[in-house]
Amino acid sequence: MTGKYAVIGNPIEHSKSPLIHAAFAEQTGQDMTYDRILGTDFERDVRAFLAAGGRGLNVTVPFKEDAWRLADERSARAETAGAVNTLIRLDDDRLRGDNTDGIGLVRDLTQNHGVRLHGKRILLLGAGGASRGVVRPLLEQQPAQLVIANRTAPKALDLAEELRGLGPITGCGLDQLNGLAFDLIINGTSAGLGGEMPDLSADCLVPGGVCYDMMYGDRPTAFVCWGQAQGASQSLDGLGMLVEQAAESFYLWRGVRPETALVIRLLRP
Ligand code: ATR
Image (cartoon, rainbow, N blue to C red; front, side, top):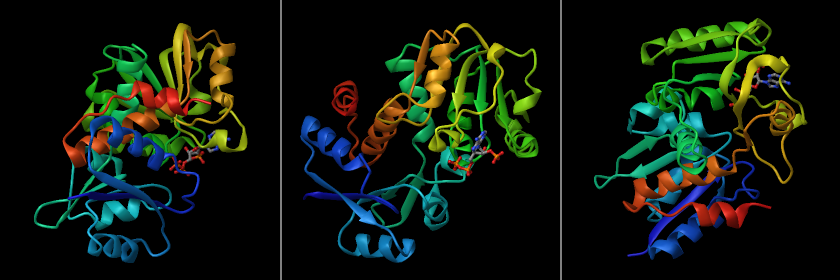
């Protein structure tokens, strides 16, 4: 029977997920459809999709927290993220919530770009939902330290305090990084939406370090440009993370792991 899947968000017309999952389905020979749903009343929209035979959903802005609440059970990484981007309909019709964003980031860094995270000093910029969503998978790689730095310092301190049982994590203000240098800087702020770059001192990146922006665009983001200007060995945007998080969702639904490199190349402008 054809499996029925979709992505729900608002706005949704810009989403690349249907293209990505169509490519995965073709490549792996999976019999499935994948549509876009413009969400208005999240729970009602999800129930209607399930009533029509839906097997799973990707969830995007602004519904990831609603999906977390709606899920009957959640993975540990979704629990920590406080957000769900993948809903899986179980055989008994209950909904399982997962979050594949963090593992998508880790896979893009480690497998696609050969960046080893074990023993490294990692700086994560921002203390909102995007950053929270990736903390657990990053710490599972056993970095030497993970520093969350935020424009509004108390939010970083609170987040680090809440998650400190997971590994060597600390929080501070963006203006409190003086003298610290990192092997990898990940941008999880929304500054790039306005074409801005978080206010960061140039010596935060070790020579030859790596920069990674969780955002992406048709042109290099402000943060990617900053990394290039600092002499980063690699300054990467989040397109690979987008495809890798989709691949993990696909695997959770279909039990098959698609090849991602071709799809990343397909999407690269
Ligand atoms: P998301 O769910 O995308 O993470 P969010 O929860 O609104 O969105 O969080 C946005 C993050 O980007 C916050 O960490 C925010 O910093 P503040 O907590 O100080 O607001 C950060 N951010 C947004 N614009 C920024 C800018 N111009 N410079 C630095 N940080 C910025």
